[in-house]
Image (tube, rainbow, N blue to C red; front, side, top):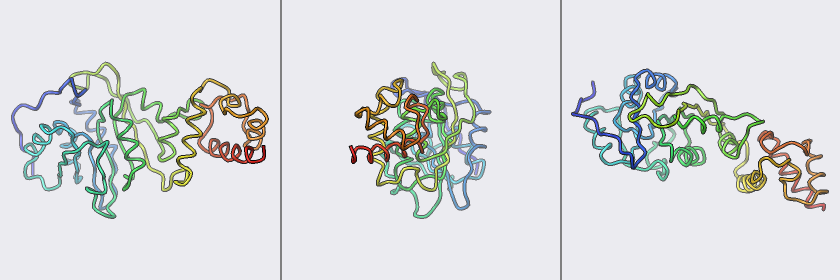
Length: 271
């Protein structure tokens, strides 16, 4: 059934940092990047006026929209009245318990133009929560996307916190002119494919991120200084992990961080 065409679309609200994606080419590119598994569906974060929603439905997907603003919820319900493949949920994606809206054992993927101010907590919620999507195709600020998908040499705490759970790849940049109103920065669509199992076992999760966070407090320091341990202990740990003490934290891979954490624990036990 074709969507119902209501009157004028709601205007974006500056107070909420809203920038509605209006470029039909970009919308089509995002929808084309979404790969839905058999029997699966799309969870769209932030339906807004329904521009991406319409393209996702046109591709034949079942869509669950999570929208935080009441007026947008009402607009979406009116615009797509009678569309059986669409469910609209009034909720904040940062707080939503997906287990309450995702049918058991049904695979799903996530798509959406994430609000700049809420992108990081939304992504973290989806990566760490349950159930988990198989992948995400989301738009974020360009600098954030590049940080998320960084390789060793330019790694940050954000990159590690995402890549522990997912493989990250930037897909394409989006000009401010694609939005109404245009933001002051460029955006980037990024794909996150979740790993079958996180690189860090759940039992180690808290200790791992505490260790990495402490070391990243001074990311430009060489790793032997950033460990905040006695010199002889850090030298022993770095030697066991096979890491040059002159390297900086941003150059380490996640596997090297795990090896270094274990080596530091053993070195401290024998100090």
